[in-house]
Length: 87
Image (cartoon, rainbow, N blue to C red; front, side, top):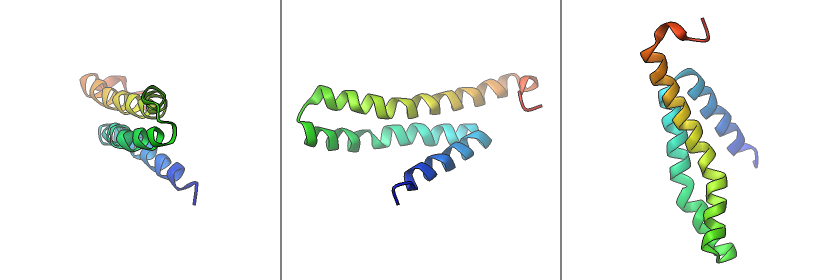
C-alpha cells in the first residue's frame, strides 16, 4: 500500500513523457495542490512556520520545476519542430 504514490508518480511521468503539456500541467497542479496539505500537516507536528515552509519547499518545488520544464519543452518543440531528439 505504501508504494501506491510511487506508482502514481511513475504514471504521471509516463504521461508527461508522451504528452509534455498535459503531463507538465499535472506535475504543476500536483505540486501546488499538495502544498497546503503538506504545510498544515508539518505545522501541526512541529509548530514552526519556517520549518514547515522549508519542508514544503523541499517536497513541492521539485514537482513544480519538473512540470515547468515539461511545459517549456513542449513549447520549444513546437517552435523548432526539426530539433526533436527522438528522430
